[in-house]
Image (cartoon, rainbow, N blue to C red; front, side, top):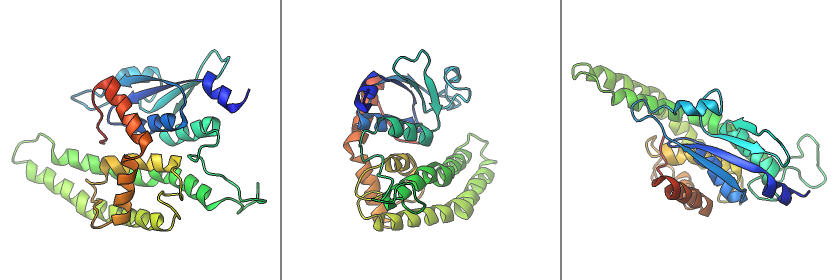
Length: 258
């Protein structure tokens, strides 16, 4: 059985949650043209937590989670964590897609230092998006929640002060460092994307923190023109739009937000 037949017969189910990182996995599935089933979940309107039903799929009760059932298998493989899910899908279903860059230089297969620049960037940014950048976006969200918390008026100066200290003393210098870094990486990638001339899984992983939280974190066209143009380019990708339209079709709306 060739890879195309395997894609046609494998069953993939994505457990999608609003205001979550699961939209990136949907984008990858659309790019790879992998047949899939979608199950929609919504956050609790009061707590903003994922519904308890997700714990029946994975013990942590988070999204994204996918179930992949191989041809002839009786039980699916359950996968969590965005980067792991995307790497797994690319390993099995990329079928020559540029989402997974070529790993080895010609004649350097399996040798230390024989990797292509595009592949090295791909593997780095697959880890960077969640390991380095996303943590600051989450802290920014916490700081915003502290600032907007429903507290008595005489307490509000305290909560505003705490949120302000987190923003000015911790978040702003870190966002400046990261956005400057990404702006520079784009200028040296050799193309319009973070790894080079082609859209890769790493671009899709980076899309969520940059699109959902970038403007709130100070990512402006004036400060970071190259990075800002890159974010706009990602939002205009056909696969991104198709994934968003899929959610609108099923759920009535789509919002890229933390």
